[in-house]
Length: 217
Image: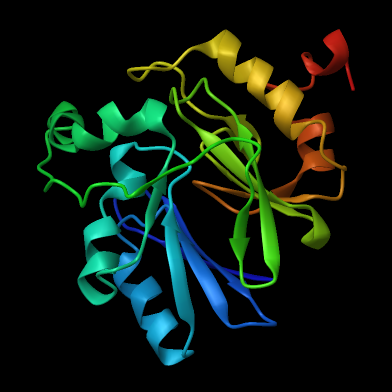
């Protein structure tokens, strides 16, 4: 599997193209303002887009869904149902930041934690990780040693919990049970900033070190 990153201006969010190299199939994960470049990459590399998968429905991670759909109009859109209200309220979200946004195409498929998302011959495990958003999920490709973690954890930081639907205790529980239980060499691709690893965050992230196992890791 190959992961390509497309970072948008403004919020600096990362959209990802996860490509199953054996089949040439791919999914677009969290398309924000980097969506035009992501679409061009799909076209130039002759890939088969099998879906748009959203880790959560905050404005910066969904405002490029319509851009992807404009070129690939039949592409399924996957979202956890607990984030459907956020998704449909994208214009209200934008107004909170003094911005404007257009409604996005309606999701077509519900993400169900525990049910895999299959891309060609590659498989993602879906783990439920609320706290930053009520329907947040992460996508773990165990065979490839990587996870797409949205806004749950970043290099040296964690996701906000002060936005609508957020809760710090829930977020910390999600990180402890769903992220820090992965092997230390698992590469984490976050919604903002550069990739990192579980092991690096376990021992250096100032938000996590005091919380892992109730003591310093």
